[in-house]
Amino acid sequence: MWRDALLVAGKDLRIERRSRVATAQVLPFAVLVLALFAFALDTDGRILRISAPGLFWIAVLLASMLAAQRSFAVEVDDRGLDGMRLSGLDPAGIFLGKAGAVAIELLVLEGLLLIGTALLYDSPLRGSGAVLLIVTCVLATAGLASVGAIYGALSAGLRGRETLLPLLYLPVTAPVLLTGAKAMEAAMGVTPGLQVGEGWPWVRLLGVFAVLYVAFGVLAFGALVEET
View (cartoon, rainbow, N blue to C red):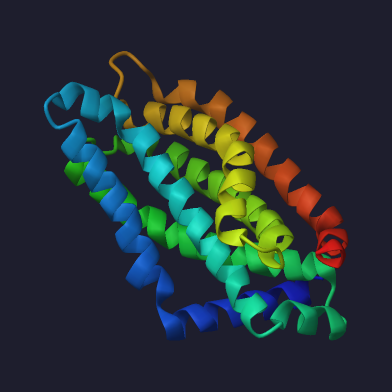
Protein backbone atom coordinates (compact mmCIF):
# COMPACT_ATOMS: atom_id res chain seq x y z
CA MET A 1 0.00 0.00 0.00
CA TRP A 2 2.71 2.49 0.96
CA ARG A 3 4.79 1.69 -2.12
CA ASP A 4 1.76 2.28 -4.34
CA ALA A 5 0.97 5.50 -2.49
CA LEU A 6 4.48 6.82 -3.14
CA LEU A 7 4.21 5.92 -6.83
CA VAL A 8 0.87 7.71 -7.25
CA ALA A 9 1.94 10.76 -5.24
CA GLY A 10 5.18 11.00 -7.21
CA LYS A 11 3.27 10.86 -10.49
CA ASP A 12 0.86 13.61 -9.42
CA LEU A 13 3.64 15.86 -8.16
CA ARG A 14 5.58 15.43 -11.40
CA ILE A 15 2.46 16.40 -13.35
CA GLU A 16 2.08 19.50 -11.17
CA ARG A 17 5.75 20.41 -11.56
CA ARG A 18 5.40 20.33 -15.34
CA SER A 19 1.96 21.95 -15.61
CA ARG A 20 2.34 24.45 -12.73
CA VAL A 21 -1.43 24.63 -12.29
CA ALA A 22 -1.20 25.11 -8.52
CA THR A 23 1.27 27.99 -8.81
CA ALA A 24 -0.33 29.61 -11.86
CA GLN A 25 -4.02 29.20 -10.98
CA VAL A 26 -4.79 27.85 -7.51
CA LEU A 27 -2.39 30.12 -5.58
CA PRO A 28 -3.48 33.35 -7.35
CA PHE A 29 -7.11 32.37 -6.75
CA ALA A 30 -6.53 31.90 -3.01
CA VAL A 31 -4.60 35.17 -2.72
CA LEU A 32 -7.38 36.95 -4.61
CA VAL A 33 -9.95 35.59 -2.13
CA LEU A 34 -7.90 36.96 0.79
CA ALA A 35 -7.46 40.31 -0.95
CA LEU A 36 -11.18 40.68 -1.69
CA PHE A 37 -12.06 39.99 1.94
CA ALA A 38 -9.43 42.53 3.01
CA PHE A 39 -10.93 45.19 0.74
CA ALA A 40 -14.45 44.42 1.97
CA LEU A 41 -13.49 44.73 5.66
CA ASP A 42 -10.85 47.43 5.38
CA THR A 43 -13.07 50.06 7.03
CA ASP A 44 -12.63 48.35 10.41
CA GLY A 45 -9.14 47.05 11.17
CA ARG A 46 -10.26 45.35 14.38
CA ILE A 47 -12.85 43.23 12.59
CA LEU A 48 -10.26 42.45 9.92
CA ARG A 49 -7.81 41.06 12.48
CA ILE A 50 -10.47 39.04 14.30
CA SER A 51 -11.75 37.59 11.03
CA ALA A 52 -8.28 36.67 9.72
CA PRO A 53 -8.27 32.97 10.88
CA GLY A 54 -11.68 32.21 9.42
CA LEU A 55 -10.95 33.99 6.14
CA PHE A 56 -7.61 32.19 5.86
CA TRP A 57 -9.30 28.79 6.12
CA ILE A 58 -12.03 29.77 3.68
CA ALA A 59 -9.32 30.58 1.14
CA VAL A 60 -7.56 27.27 1.87
CA LEU A 61 -10.86 25.38 1.64
CA LEU A 62 -11.69 26.79 -1.79
CA ALA A 63 -8.13 26.23 -3.02
CA SER A 64 -8.15 22.62 -1.78
CA MET A 65 -11.35 21.98 -3.73
CA LEU A 66 -9.72 23.26 -6.91
CA ALA A 67 -6.60 21.16 -6.28
CA ALA A 68 -8.66 17.99 -5.73
CA GLN A 69 -10.73 18.66 -8.82
CA ARG A 70 -7.58 19.15 -10.88
CA SER A 71 -6.03 15.97 -9.47
CA PHE A 72 -8.87 13.79 -10.76
CA ALA A 73 -9.57 15.76 -13.93
CA VAL A 74 -6.16 14.62 -15.15
CA GLU A 75 -7.14 10.99 -14.57
CA VAL A 76 -10.49 11.36 -16.35
CA ASP A 77 -9.02 12.96 -19.46
CA ASP A 78 -6.83 9.97 -20.33
CA ARG A 79 -8.64 7.27 -18.29
CA GLY A 80 -5.70 7.17 -15.92
CA LEU A 81 -7.84 6.00 -13.00
CA ASP A 82 -8.92 2.94 -14.96
CA GLY A 83 -5.29 2.30 -15.85
CA MET A 84 -4.25 2.42 -12.19
CA ARG A 85 -7.02 0.01 -11.24
CA LEU A 86 -6.11 -2.44 -14.00
CA SER A 87 -2.42 -2.24 -13.10
CA GLY A 88 -3.11 -3.92 -9.77
CA LEU A 89 -2.34 -0.96 -7.55
CA ASP A 90 -3.85 -1.15 -4.08
CA PRO A 91 -6.95 1.11 -3.95
CA ALA A 92 -5.90 2.31 -0.50
CA GLY A 93 -2.49 3.16 -1.94
CA ILE A 94 -4.10 5.12 -4.77
CA PHE A 95 -6.18 7.06 -2.25
CA LEU A 96 -3.20 7.83 -0.01
CA GLY A 97 -1.10 8.84 -2.99
CA LYS A 98 -3.72 11.18 -4.45
CA ALA A 99 -4.49 12.68 -1.04
CA GLY A 100 -0.80 12.97 -0.17
CA ALA A 101 0.03 14.87 -3.35
CA VAL A 102 -2.84 17.31 -2.75
CA ALA A 103 -1.75 17.70 0.89
CA ILE A 104 1.81 18.62 -0.09
CA GLU A 105 0.54 21.23 -2.54
CA LEU A 106 -1.79 22.64 0.12
CA LEU A 107 0.91 22.88 2.78
CA VAL A 108 3.07 24.96 0.44
CA LEU A 109 0.04 27.08 -0.40
CA GLU A 110 -0.80 27.60 3.28
CA GLY A 111 2.72 28.79 4.03
CA LEU A 112 2.40 31.49 1.38
CA LEU A 113 -1.13 32.40 2.43
CA LEU A 114 0.00 32.86 6.05
CA ILE A 115 2.40 35.53 4.84
CA GLY A 116 -0.40 37.16 2.88
CA THR A 117 -2.72 37.01 5.89
CA ALA A 118 -0.15 38.67 8.13
CA LEU A 119 0.36 41.48 5.60
CA LEU A 120 -3.24 42.07 4.50
CA TYR A 121 -4.93 41.60 7.87
CA ASP A 122 -2.20 42.96 10.14
CA SER A 123 -2.24 39.67 12.08
CA PRO A 124 1.36 38.58 12.79
CA LEU A 125 1.85 35.19 14.40
CA ARG A 126 2.81 35.06 18.06
CA GLY A 127 6.00 33.09 18.63
CA SER A 128 4.36 30.94 21.30
CA GLY A 129 1.63 29.91 18.88
CA ALA A 130 3.91 28.63 16.10
CA VAL A 131 3.72 24.96 17.16
CA LEU A 132 -0.05 25.15 17.56
CA LEU A 133 -0.42 26.68 14.11
CA ILE A 134 1.84 24.09 12.45
CA VAL A 135 -0.04 21.17 14.00
CA THR A 136 -3.35 22.78 13.03
CA CYS A 137 -2.27 23.18 9.41
CA VAL A 138 -1.00 19.59 9.15
CA LEU A 139 -4.16 18.03 10.60
CA ALA A 140 -6.52 20.30 8.68
CA THR A 141 -4.64 19.63 5.45
CA ALA A 142 -4.85 15.87 6.02
CA GLY A 143 -8.61 16.14 6.46
CA LEU A 144 -9.15 18.41 3.46
CA ALA A 145 -6.96 16.34 1.15
CA SER A 146 -8.67 13.11 2.21
CA VAL A 147 -12.15 14.46 1.58
CA GLY A 148 -10.96 15.91 -1.72
CA ALA A 149 -9.63 12.52 -2.83
CA ILE A 150 -12.83 10.72 -1.79
CA TYR A 151 -15.27 13.06 -3.50
CA GLY A 152 -12.93 13.79 -6.37
CA ALA A 153 -12.98 10.10 -7.27
CA LEU A 154 -16.72 9.84 -6.65
CA SER A 155 -17.58 12.73 -8.97
CA ALA A 156 -14.80 12.22 -11.54
CA GLY A 157 -16.81 10.08 -13.94
CA LEU A 158 -20.11 11.93 -13.55
CA ARG A 159 -21.61 14.55 -15.80
CA GLY A 160 -21.50 18.00 -14.25
CA ARG A 161 -18.66 17.09 -11.90
CA GLU A 162 -17.45 20.70 -11.84
CA THR A 163 -20.59 21.77 -9.97
CA LEU A 164 -21.23 18.49 -8.16
CA LEU A 165 -17.91 18.42 -6.31
CA PRO A 166 -18.51 21.68 -4.38
CA LEU A 167 -21.95 20.44 -3.28
CA LEU A 168 -20.40 17.24 -1.91
CA TYR A 169 -17.16 18.71 -0.62
CA LEU A 170 -18.10 21.88 1.23
CA PRO A 171 -20.62 20.47 3.77
CA VAL A 172 -18.27 17.66 4.81
CA THR A 173 -15.28 19.96 5.28
CA ALA A 174 -17.21 22.51 7.36
CA PRO A 175 -15.98 20.93 10.66
CA VAL A 176 -12.38 21.33 9.49
CA LEU A 177 -13.04 24.97 8.67
CA LEU A 178 -14.58 25.68 12.08
CA THR A 179 -12.03 23.85 14.23
CA GLY A 180 -9.09 25.08 12.19
CA ALA A 181 -10.26 28.68 12.52
CA LYS A 182 -10.71 28.36 16.29
CA ALA A 183 -7.24 26.84 16.75
CA MET A 184 -5.64 29.47 14.53
CA GLU A 185 -7.44 32.21 16.45
CA ALA A 186 -5.70 31.06 19.63
CA ALA A 187 -2.35 30.68 17.86
CA MET A 188 -2.44 34.21 16.44
CA GLY A 189 -3.95 35.84 19.53
CA VAL A 190 -6.38 37.95 17.49
CA THR A 191 -8.91 37.96 20.35
CA PRO A 192 -7.82 39.85 23.49
CA GLY A 193 -7.32 37.55 26.47
CA LEU A 194 -7.33 34.34 24.43
CA GLN A 195 -4.38 32.13 25.42
CA VAL A 196 -2.46 29.76 23.14
CA GLY A 197 -3.35 26.79 25.34
CA GLU A 198 -7.04 27.31 24.61
CA GLY A 199 -6.44 26.24 21.02
CA TRP A 200 -5.29 22.68 21.78
CA PRO A 201 -8.80 21.27 22.51
CA TRP A 202 -9.78 22.41 19.02
CA VAL A 203 -6.67 20.74 17.60
CA ARG A 204 -7.64 17.45 19.24
CA LEU A 205 -11.09 17.68 17.69
CA LEU A 206 -9.49 18.51 14.36
CA GLY A 207 -7.32 15.40 14.73
CA VAL A 208 -10.42 13.26 15.24
CA PHE A 209 -11.92 14.57 11.99
CA ALA A 210 -8.65 13.98 10.13
CA VAL A 211 -8.34 10.38 11.37
CA LEU A 212 -11.96 9.63 10.46
CA TYR A 213 -11.60 11.06 6.95
CA VAL A 214 -8.34 9.24 6.27
CA ALA A 215 -9.64 5.93 7.67
CA PHE A 216 -12.83 6.15 5.63
CA GLY A 217 -10.87 6.86 2.46
CA VAL A 218 -8.50 3.92 3.02
CA LEU A 219 -11.40 1.53 3.62
CA ALA A 220 -13.91 2.78 1.06
CA PHE A 221 -11.89 4.19 -1.84
CA GLY A 222 -11.80 0.94 -3.79
CA ALA A 223 -15.58 0.50 -3.63
CA LEU A 224 -16.16 4.13 -4.56
CA VAL A 225 -13.97 3.86 -7.64
CA GLU A 226 -15.72 0.65 -8.70
CA GLU A 227 -19.11 2.35 -8.41
CA THR A 228 -18.04 5.33 -10.51
